[in-house]
Image (cartoon, rainbow, N blue to C red):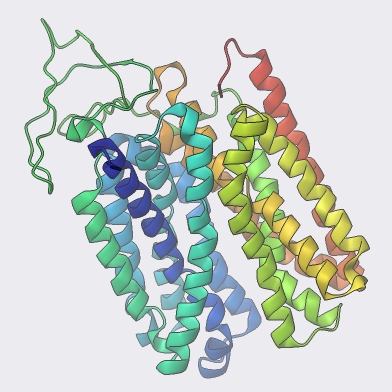
Amino acid sequence: MFSVSRLQRRQVATFVLTWVAYASTYLLRKPLGVIKSDLASELSLTKTQLGWLDTSMLLPYATMQMALGPLADRYGARSTLAWCLFLSAASMVWFGTWIDVFLLMIMLFFNGVAQAQTWPCCVKALGAWYPDRQRNAIFGIWGTCTFAGGIIGTGLAVHIQRAYSWRSVFFYPALVVAAVGALVFIFLYTPWEVGLDIPGKAAKSAPSYTRPMVSTPYGESMRTLQAQRTHRTPVLYAGNPEPVTKGGNTNSIKFWQLLGIKMLPELAATVFFVKIVRYCLLMWLPMYLFQELHYTKAQAGLLSTSFEIGGVLGSATLGVFIDKLFHGDSLQGTSTVIMFSTLSLIMFLLTSSWGIPFNVMCMLLTGMFNCGPDAILTGSLPTQLGDKDGRNAHAAISGFINGFGSVGTVLQGPIIGAIAEWYGWEGTFYFMIIVSLIATFCICRAVSTQQDLSGTLVR
């Protein structure tokens, strides 16, 4: 008879809850792109003003991940993630009731700030529940929330826009995000808090402290860890230590200390260049298909989703691919995949005039190779770096890498617009190929740095 252990139930529950939590953030991001034509017609906004609305959300989202990354390490992933979702919902629930573009920018700004910590919190919470040998596969499958959330967010916004009006496209999703925040606050706990150890995690030393007995929603008692002899005596235990005092975890790494971590600059630069290519395609591919390849608007919109579908497939399979073929070596695996991403862009450019089957195939492959490594680069690898040398910096490192990479999403808009205007669409592909080659160089530098370090990081 098939039986599921308490640990397995908790692992599945944490996986599902964090997947839903991060996917739900797209319910308050994607509608902005859907209603831009409505904002332009009803509020008489120019394209420049619409562009500033994008920047109002994307810029704080990128920068606050780097600046506020240590919050989840200090105060815990559960509380930080729940409050981020609450604040995101609160900032956008009344978006449709305003007509002043400055007020709309302020609401989008606070939405970007609130959502900046959702990825680091989810990475920290999920990484605590799985052993090192499973991280690549788990984070790869979990990373599908990014692309699935985008598809769901767009579909829901289109439905609400048609059924009601553009003024409601943020209201109902905000209620959903707030409800998800409540679930996170009630049910998301670390293994240590519910008295579970994770097989396969090395025993670590944590500062001694006393944790009061607390009743969880499942009626379980949290483990009480009492210092021996003096408060300086460490307690050794397996699992994911998260020393907590009344004011939070006092051992969280400071922002300026992140810059001295080996391999962190290379990984951050890799994500930066990878995301430039990704958002170039996400934001401009439909227009390219319509203007350059002469598809209808409906065909262009439908075919462009091949890139996102490829992202879902790549994210779901890449972790298993790395574990099987590269024996869990995340850096070697992702460097190979990013190189294939460059090759798929070259193939897309060379075969663009060959018709729909070749276009769809190339977009699927590009999506798989470009989007697939995302959860490894910003989830699995930061978690491993956070564990290195006894650090408690999972959220801080993940936030820095993903935040620095997200700066690329802010820059790609004006860059691609200028290149397309001056050199045509073919020039944009040359630009993306060059940027992808730079990303390959950066990840290869990370591989070289890893080999220079004593001991292996990813095995």
